[in-house]
Image: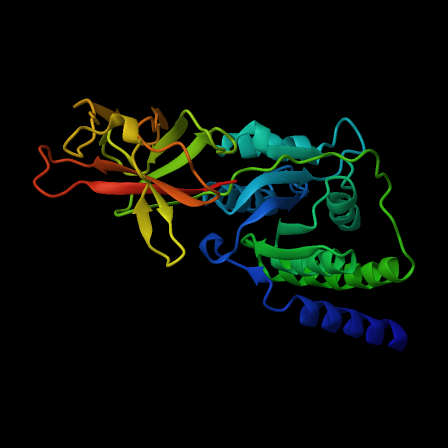
Length: 338
């Protein structure tokens, strides 16, 4: 009994020290990772009611995706029988929270945390991860990731439970860490590995605006290469009033000195007096609250020789009252050219 207690203390101190500073609470404070690993749990509790652990993990994963902090989510859980299917439940719930289906990857062999973490590297090729679960579980998953050569951080979903439930779960987690240590020492492997599955790359983007409520992102193409004919952007209006945007846009490149400079114009459109024949139609499109709006941008008047680097697209928008007596606001989305 004494050896068991000492070993449990040792395992928990090791885990807490190794994962200190790598578990986050807020999505806006976490760095970007290509892939998030959403660890599974039963959608229903033992009384057959919705499980708050499951609900909070889904909410956190969706928030992380919509904040642009991850590009893909691996929904990894247990699917031992037809009647028990954690990955499909996570898949359906993420879609209901606005995560696109093509950004959700199902892992039906995540029978244990060890299986989920090791398979993320060995099957899905992830050398870095953002792990999503509750705090205590995250610490164990991070330790497993480090032991398997994965550079990982974690974000903790809220824990809505009473004191006695928290105590019971904490005791279970302490014993799970004992088992994890033994698994690592004895080289325990997942139940199944299988063929490797490649997760495609997504062009990194960063969106921001001069006022709250409007965001803009690039949806096509997946990569911007030179030469490039068009860019499809999507506006999302999170206010409860309609917004308005038009045809005008500007594309800038980040210089070595850290300054944004507009791209040079194509000289074939230059007049004798040095002016450029650029005309935007005086048209306005309404951006309704909560309804994504897409528009195609054709940068035909810019010089075609785009070098590799960081660029940003700027488009103006405005909120009522109209006509606007103050300058319009601007939405930006940064992107990379390879």
